[in-house]
Length: 115
Image 1 (cartoon, rainbow, N blue to C red):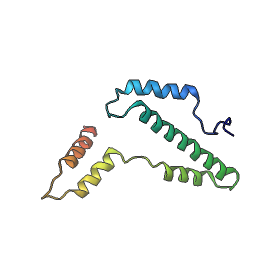
Image 2: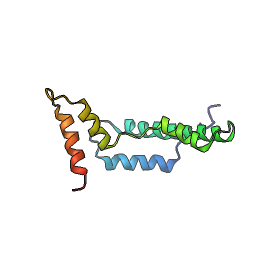
Image 3: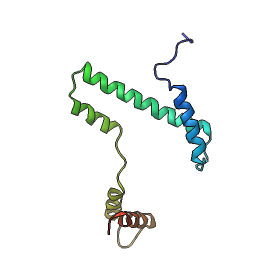
Image 4: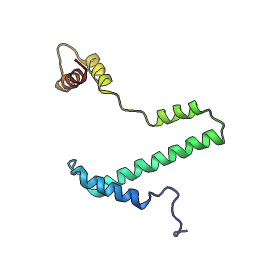
């Protein structure tokens, strides 16, 4: 049983790409190569599993495409946009306690808007 390869194993060229990405990243977060590659591999494997689940739901459980897309979006939500972050920061700010992080978020959002 130990000679069988797991069905979700990244191809060697992808692992090489992760290594190249790590070298280009400058490793500024203090984490080493092992942590970087383990994180990438976990993300890659989770994405492969999510797609396999979606395919199963379409083929075997007769889910409609829009339901599978909703499932994907639920499991991989997009991070809030800078505009959404700024609006939330504005809602969280009180006049008496203006947070510098919130001010920076609002400033970035405003600076990104066209003139």
